[in-house]
Length: 163
Image (cartoon, rainbow, N blue to C red; front, side, top):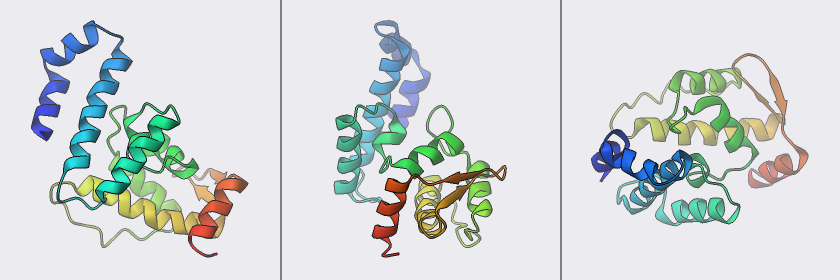
């Protein structure tokens, strides 16, 4: 299915879909197909119930992006997406690692480059970063900019980690 989705993105099928509707709607349909495929994967780090929960939460909140449908889409997830995902919601690894470095998250042991490694890196790094951000109350961007976590989000993060 993954190969089919990639082919759809790069072939006449994609053109046909987007010719009958605006490009954003066509892309959203392709993203939804990919999300549905990911939900069905049997060997995934993220459990099926969480994938369904993320997708349904995004839909309920009117979020249309693929990134929103595959994460908690809280302040930190949304901020990270803006900083480290490309226009197709794929991880820009160097940008992500730079944010981890800026926040003191050691990623040196995450060297596995087998299929799906980018997703595992994004998930593992984001989880480690969440703890650091919960403790510090700020997110440091790669350029040195300090983003203060909104109070409501900080309370939620700190409660999750019993801080």
